[in-house]
Image (cartoon, rainbow, N blue to C red; front, side):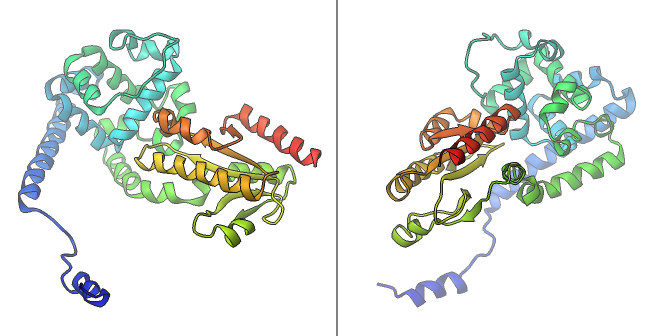
Length: 326
């Protein structure tokens, strides 16, 4: 059996640093080149015929999937963000938006039916085969930033991507796309962008004391299984309310694991803090479209809230009732 130092040395001294496969790289470069050529083609069409809806509709009809990818590239909208937005607009089922997006011409829907997110392949198929879905996308790109309802749905950072300047290949708009693309990951990680700050502000407004961190009994008795808690009211030694928060705009395979972890934590809290209320803030389109994971996730909590204004009011009343009863 190889000893640990030898195994360590293997990784240190035989490290490839950045793995790549020559055949894969060659094929992917061809793919990138084709997208670039499609963008250049669109730029010439806009330059020669103007930045009009008809130009973009014809472009999507002719170029299909590559045309959509080119549009996403110049605006800086990710494929997943587009999927989430389409899902959200289908969920809302707003008459004015349905008309703008020609919804009745590309989706048969029932107002009482449950919306299931489409796979990327279905969106690509609609782009290739359905003229009204192409019109839907073009209207979304052209009018998304000025539509009142979409303005309420999207944060400014995302809303700015729906810009006529980007579609007309304005240089400043292209620079904006690059800057937003570069900073998207950093923005998502910023503390000020975390919805948990809304909970903090509300608790401070209510003058409710709270702490963040590990529960003392779990550290003492369940150190391997314990996890850091988002909010502990009023403190770690005598918790009355324990809060975990999960706001997801995207989906991942880890959502299933997260729900299992929360169910496990529920058991530990019941064991060591039987009087404490374990609740969750679960929100975001990322949870909406992973309903099986969501069902498991909500089962871990005594009650669940979202960041909707009415839910925040309900949470305020919940906290006051618990504190007043003890």
